[in-house]
Image (cartoon, rainbow, N blue to C red):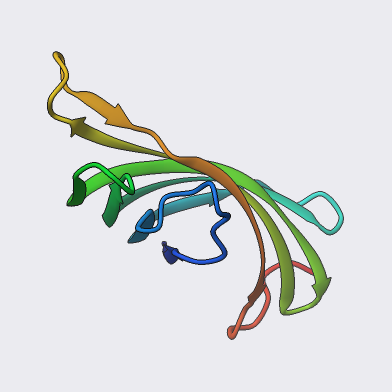
Length: 126
């Protein structure tokens, strides 16, 4: 089991809309394959809840909140017995986001992240 949260709401360029924002939180299952030396690949499937603000400088602005599914995978690299570095890819599927289209369109954000993990419990892999 794993839980994640993120807020994409900073460091915009001049060409991006001033109110473009997305924050999400969710959890689900993660499956790690047996590690190869210090590497451990994994896959994940999450149920998530998210909020997004969108619009243009001159047109209408919108806000939407909904439940959606996310999935992805990546690889973890062990630096020390309890400290890992992770490279992660996630794909999200927000159903019926563009309700004005027929059929209603999906919003499918995706991206890569890099981070660190500290295991508080005793490490399982040596």
